[in-house]
Length: 224
Length: 321
Image (cartoon, rainbow over all chains, first blue to last red; front, side, top):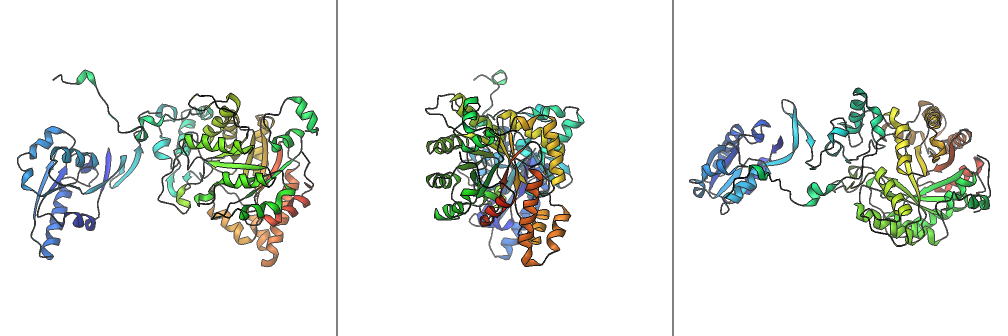
């Protein structure tokens, strides 16, 4: 799941100051689950902004709407008839949703209301941690199901580095050393001998460095 | 290993590079290396003056590569200065700051100046240094860098497959930390580095001699001491304070309480000498350990003490090669 975090309200206020009619647009998927940009957060933010601008004596129209997703054409079409009533849209979707909305309503300024942080899982209520860097070439079968690219601060493919201490990473005593986790798991799987297999040099062109990526399933495409 | 002459070594066909360090290892001597940290500026004298203090007492001098992620003059330039004053450099290269293009490129740059030794490292995380907000690279890790260097030297090819004109003539080193966690894979990790092509190893500095000897026992069990030349890392403590700091604040460091107690037990102005004594005694003990092929003395900002340590440890004069 995509994990996001609310932007500081001060930053949002700076960005929306110049717009009189504002639509706060939430998303019912990932940002709802990580409690950053769903219907509830849209409501809270709308109230906070209304109170702020009222105190400043600035008149603003601040409306609220939450779409099922902002990364799909069909849901974004739902605001087609009202979009031009606003001077800007403050989207609480992840970076994908903000951009897709901007592409669809390209004459309406789009402002992000959350910081999109990572692909992660829900450890416990209120705590999300990173698990995947979307490298495009998954090696989890060889590392006991634990990813050294997303969970090792140096993404070493043949770890641990010399800074691993008591199962924790050198950069933060609370951060598990990914390679300690991998070794523990290989041991539990009875595959500790696999540790000595040298992981080959990574093909990074399927990750960010190779340029913006695209997936096509020709078999499910609808012909024109 | 019994001693051989240089001619005998040359005749054996075992030499793989022009490295002076390799020659000393293969002749059967205990090799001695030390290190210099480059300056936080562009004055080469900061490197050459330190080198002058130690050059007659060591076989080669390592130059660190933006150690602890603190930006300094690059290792390659410093190695060139050393080479130009007649010293044998060991280029340290981390994978933190360079992608595979730059890594291969800098290797060729070093080889063009006939720098003959390189230590392949991962590097401390950038959050320790002066550019915490920067990116890190880690296009390759240290194991893959070892493989790359061997490939460039022995196959004469770039990673991309093209031929290299005048392949690099570099003796390949790596680091090992017998004290990092988890202990159970520290020897498998060494085996991995050897399988990748490491020819010499410099360990993290050793204070827990029992643990190091246990690591060496396991190393010998697997025959690794016959496949790679292992140099024991040594750093003299300047004070009890330094010992405590290293024990508590430096990851992968094992400083036994007895060492701290011994340093704390003497007056503050006597602690530096006590630290040197501890270092010398450690070297004397580890000289007897089968599989130890030399000592890497890291006396950071205390290079002037290296001659005393080398002499008192019975490692002076150095063989003329």
